[in-house]
Image 1: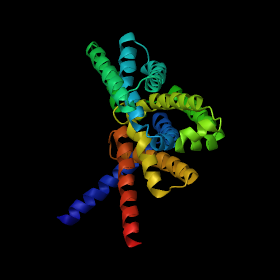
Image 2: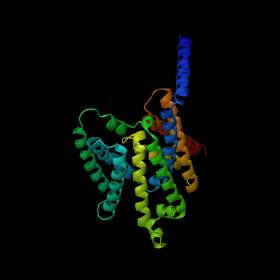
Image 3: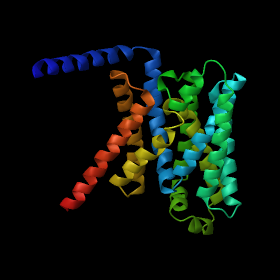
Image 4: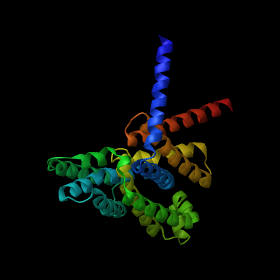
Length: 289
């Protein structure tokens, strides 16, 4: 009986792998793989600074508030992507402005604006009648649905982020570690902060279609957090974060395609498992030392 079960399991795996190979011949699957790599690199790059600057709640707020942009796009009959980009950009800048110009703690400001925007998004979603496929896809992600426009937008955000962060890496590191010292040394702290928030907001917008509003924050935080466990040297940490982000995205895509799982959750699940494995390995190594 056990041998029959093993044979059946192996047959299913072979069948799934053959189906996956066949799927790779289709343009939509090729776009999904390319998109996964690009978004993995983008998430790893920006996520490194998000983690060190403790902005994970900020990206979480932006992603959830993006629901307003999605519902507006559906209601107005506009591609949600074109509503997400300007909405998340404006929202991110306004939130940072409120944080800088009030005496309230940043987490309080983020909680207030997240709750308000989420309430507006839910109210608007209730106004949508008929088919809600676009809304559901953006909420839970569907990387198989990304098109050439999405890839171009991702490439542009990735190039802009790379140019901005890597050309000013020394200043960005100092700003991350000690903003007061950066200010004294004449680094335009506010310009760099707002520039980073703009790029982060745009990255959230382009990644939402792949992994969804509910999981996009994990896409930014988990690879960088995993890399942080592996190295405390900034440049090595940055490289590891990008590698983990891109490779886990591809593996997640392959697994989701082979076993017919949802692509966005599949990618995040792989990232989560990698984090658990690295965390366990680090703890065991420390005990052994």
